Amino acid sequence: TGRNAHMLRDGAPDYPTTRPDLDKLTRAILDALTGVWWADDSLVVGIDALKVFGQPGVTVRAQRVGS
Image (cartoon, rainbow, N blue to C red):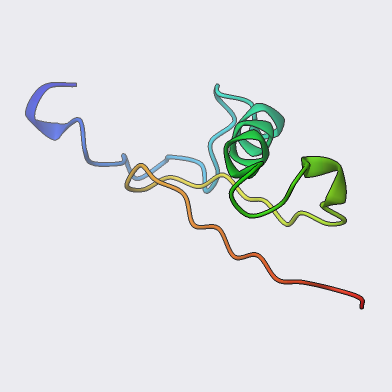
């Protein structure tokens, strides 16, 4: 808390197991890209998602598969 709120303590776990849930985060991203990258998120055939400590934000890499 306070001025050290941005720092992780030495014993902090490698990955956060707190809210928000990873499935809810991925669902929000899929919904946000509907109509932008794909017509419907049912077209998505794979997801590799990881929740880590660090600066807030998201990185999305999408590629077309198949024909």
